[in-house]
Length: 214
Image 1 (cartoon, helix red, strand yellow):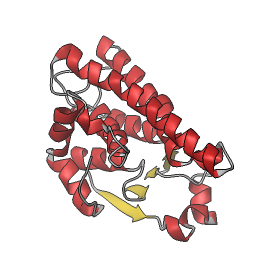
Image 2 (image 1 turned 90 degrees about the vertical axis):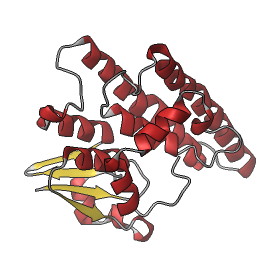
Image 3 (image 1 turned 180 degrees about the vertical axis):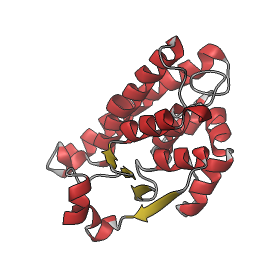
Image 4 (image 1 turned 135 degrees about the vertical axis):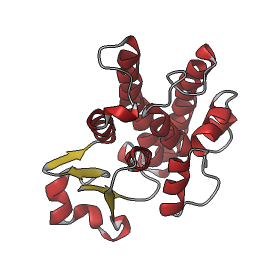
């Protein structure tokens, strides 16, 4: 049995969408983050970092969203959520997945948790403002990628795990002051294509997420 430990509207969304896309049996385990659910001994035994998500697949326990997404794609190759192994498209997928998880996602973490880098109110506000501007500059790379090939999905003609992962991060900008991911010329229509997928709609309903979704 596959189990996904999740918190609605967090980094667990991309694996949740992939599980729905795969059509496999899985169990959702909702973590009560507000009441210390990430810090219980049982959860820390699964992920010593105390972060979401965790995937249990039989005897395999995984954390880190990118690793979970790759595992799901690799163990269900018929669904085609990653390009063929050894292909140029696969190499590009690795690049984008690494960039999403280590560059864009980390800039968003700074935006949401500026107090980790500053102590007084003025400095916290400055850190958050700088992080928002960095995120917006990074989103230009996604917009340029979509414009470069004129195809419906991030890698081109084929939907891949990168699309829900990138959508999840774009969603996190929905309450930015001023410009948001959905305002970019190519990102906006692409987001609507991702949102229209039945698997994504099921996740939005299950996680009881209110609009605007992105």
